[in-house]
Image (cartoon, rainbow, N blue to C red):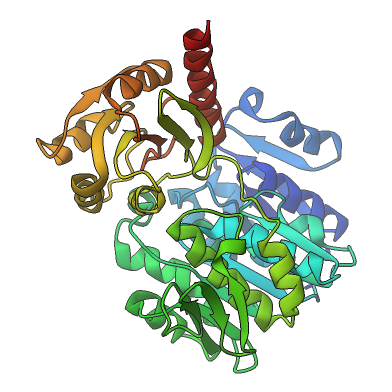
Length: 447
């Protein structure tokens, strides 16, 4: 793509927006970096764009800016806004940073999408490809923007893609696209489940028969999305019916006949078993040998804030799953714990989803639920008298209260089913607050 001399507006100056603006400058576009936040609220990296010679427009989205744009690049955190119509009404292309970067990349792209499990699966696939000796980029929604890969000598690009990125990536072409699952999330942005599912499924559309769509066995929603493209289907799941599935004590890849003992996995929990099946399906489709896959499964320990064991106190195990930012993720975390009963710490900024599935699993696995944040009242109303619930004002209070209600042999699980932005900078800060509170509680008992 030649953008020489074109006026390109980059909207949203988080890490992906900053990276896109810098990339476009190297491609000799006339770049305008735009963010609705005031200048003093922008990061140092965003403000540095101006020093580098990129025009910076902050505090508003001026309609004249979009009326004159030749191309608009939207960061994932930015929803539609009225002024954008000045560009779209003229037929101006509006794309994501992921799609922008892909237009200057020749290495095969592996996309990992889904409501839950995509970060773990992205890292696991990346580790498998690296174990096979490939030069691999791993990033996207997970962390490093794809724009950072342009101009580098990678042999494969493993990219986590969110619904926000996928909704504006309709021409992005993947060699392999795994859509792990689609459950209710981000309805505050997409408004309907159907619109959310369609956004998740957009990367299937440009795929051709030589490409591979990795989908969960028996999932009609994901199957319908995969059918929007022409890719060859490979199924996965914790079932013997999947092409990469569970057969007794092993994961079996029926395309190669390879077997991987479940006991060899460092990852724990039924949801991570499913993630491992998906990763094997993707890696096998990319030509990774069974030996490299097995070596990775036996060494990969997972990611922070994803059902990570923190400490044990008086026979109660504490787990940090702060990345459980939607109902489906929390249900998966609860289902995957080995302890029979769980005191759940939940709540945060509400995403307007249905808490019914959470109540169903709590009826079976819950000891009690501790609630904090903006969604506390709504979750408490949904739980009703199914099990005891308490509302608290801080993470420290939540941990103390959870310990009081837990019995020996129980787990205390932070898995909020909500975003963190009402009380914390992000899910990492929320998880760190939980870990600190647990360790503080343990230290107090030891003293």
